[in-house]
Length: 398
Image (tube, rainbow, N blue to C red; front, side, top):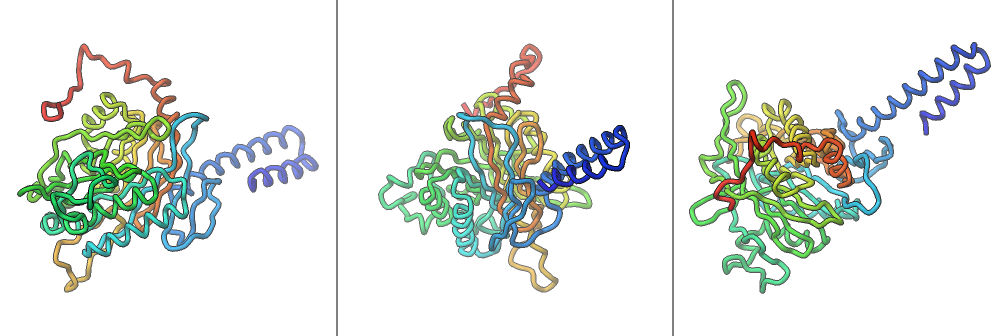
């Protein structure tokens, strides 16, 4: 409205003192610039470069309203239509400490506050390795015995996992099951380290509103890199890679099928293509923890690439950044600096909601009609040259 008023004022001024042809050119230019600036301001509101403490970026073109505790970034994706699936999603970005119990309490409070501020939220996504330090030597210490696929939290007697109470065997998982059933929402539980026999996995639990473990994704591609002058990390020193393709269906009234990967999985387009082409996913979700070497270079690029390749929504949730400890104040495990910038990308490859590196809750209203429109308008799925190439699932997933 502020831009419309400015245009009207300039129209009046020019119409009284300026030749008609000049006035028309000036008015048209100002109107165009106002519209362009309005569009840019809307984008700025959901992609802030500076932190605005205790404010929420409203979806009404960047108008601000006060909130408490943690920043929330909010934006509706373009498009949509009546009678088409979709809903509100929330990405939780928070600092992870060395205290498992503190991390668990933080997640409880964050989910509760997010649902209070955004009661129509249908899906909440947590970051990778949220219950302890992201360090290869820490994975075993923080690992839990997690429930099997299709486990039912609401119908199991005493909610035991392998004969043990959940509070003892998998307290972090219990936090997620409690929250999903309490609020009646889907939760993609970031990831925590899982122990099974002598093996450790990086595992994401996907829980339905009625407490069913609808998907259990063990990170398929392990983060083993050595970037000269950047970062060296080798998850395979401790972890074992998973061997399943992970999908769960939320129904046509919500998001339809959702495919899940973890962090480094996003670098492998073949995995994403299997999720969308073979399993018809409308959304790909990657809890992740990129660093200060790979983050600024590839984090957004990879998300937009997967969104365009697969003509779907891509969601990522990262831990918030924590500063490296001062000399002499180091903890038990090496410090890992996360990039942050949890993000939602639409099927056109546009960033529709994001944040900076600090603690935030990123909220977006998604319309699955965008996926349908994109796939109909640019029908690459039906234009594959299967006489020249073919994408097939491996033996382990059959």
